[in-house]
Length: 223
Length: 76
Image 1: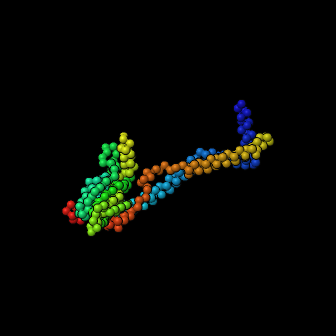
Image 2: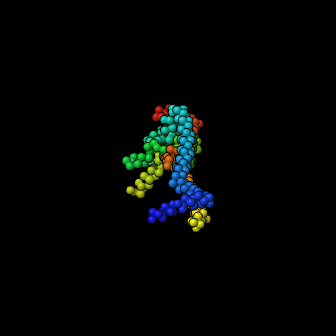
Image 3: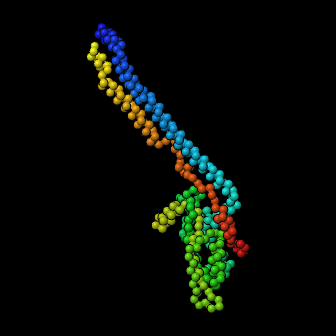
């Protein structure tokens, strides 16, 4: 056995000295070693490099987006400083602590008495007054402007009801009017024509509309 | 002796070596392609990256400031 292997080794050395065999073996073994090298060493390294490059590219993009946002926030902050004094007025115009029936209703009544018209009807739409489960009025990013339907009916002379309407539109609490119907009051004398004005519109407040709708729908459903 | 040397330089051996090399290179290419397609490990909350508009309409604020406040004493 030992003699056979020695003989075989001697033969191999002799074959390897032949130029054709030498070239062939060098080429084949080089190719195989390169393949092994590619699979075991080169592939994981290149894949890791590609992953890192991709991560770096995405990180740069993220940094750019964040830098742009920081710049926008700085601009917004400087603008907020400018309008800081007007924020209470803004919060009164579009209330941020619920529908706030309380200041709205007395203000309409006061306006009616100050302009000399008789307030014969007033209704404000439904809203959520209080909940221990949901917090639609807590200031959050998902809040939006919610409409509170308002309908008012006043009677008086023409100038007075027009004055009432003008001042309602210019009231600190913002009220948008969508329809106005003026009708002549029955039985009014010619020299002092009495008219009735029906106003329909919306007041506005800040809330999470989705939460609010869910709560109001549940209440309507009797849950 | 001649047979052994023939084996050493046979075309099939070259073909196997070349095919192995091609397979290794293909696998390398597939690995790179997969690495490109795979989402990055850097993850951020999308809301943080959302752009915001820094412009406040000052004209609207001025209009709001000019609106009347209704008091019980009639002063506005």
